[in-house]
Image (cartoon, rainbow, N blue to C red):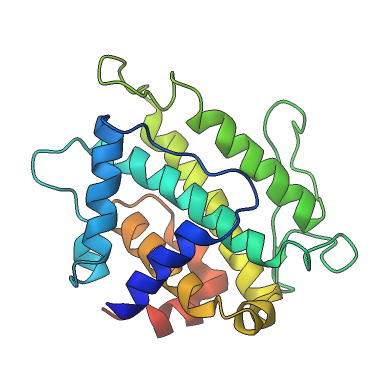
Length: 219
C-alpha cells in the first residue's frame, strides 16, 4: 500500500520524457481514470484492481489504461534519458538476444535498426499521435471506437513494453541510483497484470523480462 502511494506521488511530480496526456474533468475517461487510480491505492491486489468495473465498457477501460501507461512509460524513460544516448545505446535492444526494429508504415516502411533514443522518441510520437486522434481515441461517448481499436492498442502496448525491456536491461543501475526502481517495479506490475487480464500482449513478448516478471509479479 505504501509503495503504491509512493508510486502515485512519483508519477505526479516527476518530469516525463514527452508531455503528459491528460483527461478533461467531467468526461467519462476522467472518471474512469480516477477510478483506476483509486483502485491502486485501495489496498486490493493489482491482479484484482485491473479487472473491468461492473457495467463499464471494455474499450473505455482499455483506452484509459493505454493513456496512463503512455504517461508512465514516458516518466520511466525520462529518468534515464540523459544516459540513453546513441553512443551507449546504438541499438534498441534488450541485451544481446533481443533487438527491436522500427517501422511505422510512413517514414519507415521497412523494419529499420535505430539507436535506442531515436527508436523511443519515434515510438512516443507515434503513440501520442494516436491518442490525440479523436477517430482512434474518441473523447466523447457520441463518437464510436474504431472497429480495430483493440488491435491498435495491442500494438501500442507491445511497443511500450519494449521500453521497459530496454530500461530494465540497459539502465537498471540508474533506476537504483535515482531511487526509481521500486516505482518502476510497481508500474511494471500494473502493466503486466492489465495486459495479461485482457490478453493484450503476446506471451512471447515477455521473454526478455521473464525472470523479473517471476520475481515481482507474485500476487
